[in-house]
Length: 492
Image 1 (spheres, rainbow, N blue to C red):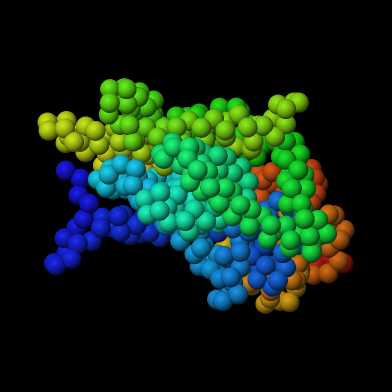
Image 2: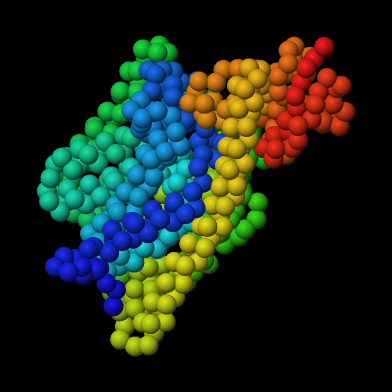
């Protein structure tokens, strides 16, 4: 009922490659570029690294997995949107392939095809796997470590456990909370093959090799900052910062559960299509089938979901007062595969039946994929709109500055990132000011849209609003560009 290959003359094409091509096409159609935010910070870090600068003053700078591949691309091909996004896109698409082989190893190829298709269409995968962020990197190392453990068990290859350990070691280079996966992976190994001497040695091998990336990073920081544990000092500082940060990320305890079924505030079920609404029913059916002798292999993914979501929900950065880990929809990408597997396994159970229900189930599955692609398109549009607006505005400002050889005056901490990115980090003719009195020669003043968070501005909103309502006579208003308001300034 579920095909695994497509015949092409004398050859057969594995359907998973068609699915990968589909995922790539959807990404290209819904291209989002570099939306202003963390991704621009990572491009700056990549530029610094491409020039041999690995100094770290903020937690983003320890996430080498995110920006070092980009730095290599910059070194080889220069700064561009393509070189910034290509590594993340590659890892995200590879994760779909890994998901296919993981499920195929654990269950069967037909179910693996269903999982790969539904997984590839997930809005959270299509959106956050397409921008320069932590998500696609953490997703990749999580799935790659499991893939190599499975391969090591099947082929009895020791080098697979060494590679799996290295994948675990790369997790702190993405986001250190990913290390919860390490004990889960060892538990999986023991569950599959028992607590034997061989598996203890395998676990030790993974543990030892997982330290290699941290040791390398620590040694470099010892040279640069005289502190082998520099990354942990930065982690401690950012935890304190995030605990006091409001209005940016979700703070409620059950955010990851809410975001499966609610669109309110930071929560948005659309990133999971309709799957969040179906998950309780699917889990119930899977448990029923598990205790009646079916779905034994598939149920292992349920434990993945339960353990990871419990950790992400209750893990604290402070006990007094109790403050949980920072929440964001994109962090849910690491437990998206078990969610998709549970839904797919239940539908596959009905598709395998020899009755009309198989066709209803198959059509329902196709409908879920269609809804996912629809929501992915809708959600990507807000990123694409932001990117188009900001990139065109930034290019306009660069053109004016270079054409007239006049500086740009900025009153925020964001516009300069985009100006530098689109100039290949060559543009220097700008000044960040904390007072309008610092405008001392002709140029252009750019005021970021006032709806942004107050932490982004170098002045109070009161002084900015006063300037906008009653601009001095030495200014000429050039219009609201969307991303910012532009003024030509010529102080006396």
